[in-house]
Image (cartoon, rainbow, N blue to C red):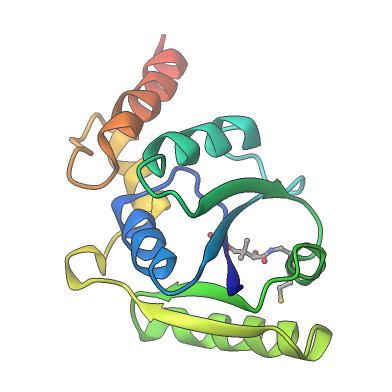
Length: 162
Ligand code: PNS
């Protein structure tokens, strides 16, 4: 059985992430979306909120499981006996960091390869940070995140403006 992990912060999940999830789920038997619980950063959404949003927006894909992890990605990957780590590449600016991360992970866990999927052109500019920046200034984020996520993001900023 071919198993892969698609890790990330997903703060929040964007249409670009969902595109990578849908495409990579077709390449493997089982795809784990791994949501990083990074204690060093203060995300907009708690890890439980991020996991719940991802579960909701991937519920139409039967071979996707959403889990959170903390600590090293390779340890999480080994624990779940995956063959590959999936990462999306938007532009050359992503490349240097992604290459270093994949090489480090390969040294730490030689049996696990990183597979890069190029982001679909329509989402090449998109990031969770851009979505948050737009929402913070009351911009329309409906073209950037799944429908379920729109209100969740706007609620966060409305709550902090009150
Ligand atoms: O969505 P992001 O923030 O680009 O995802 C980055 C992520 C979560 C894949 C990366 O930061 C990660 O794997 N963090 C876990 C800690 C770890 O393993 N770090 C070593 C990487 S060289």
